[in-house]
Length: 75
Image (tube, rainbow, N blue to C red; front, side):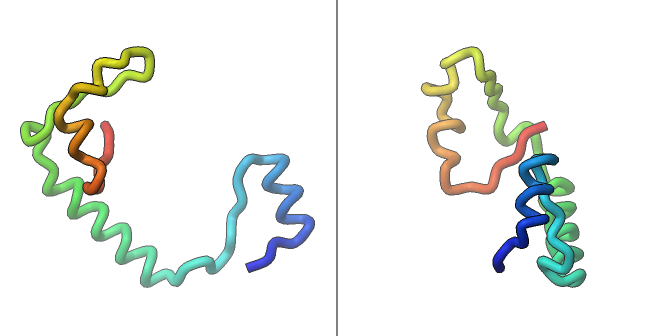
């Protein structure tokens, strides 16, 4: 997909770009449903990890070190 000059200008101006019909409505709905399932199934007691950008303690946190192959999200 090539962007038009106008799209490039809008991106530079606003910092984001809306791409109409980039994916199908069905694909978007499927993604929303799956995201809802993941959140619904989330058990916060399974992995308690605090991440702060101003501290380096996370470098030794087991979950932080071993979660590179997992889908993770933060609250």
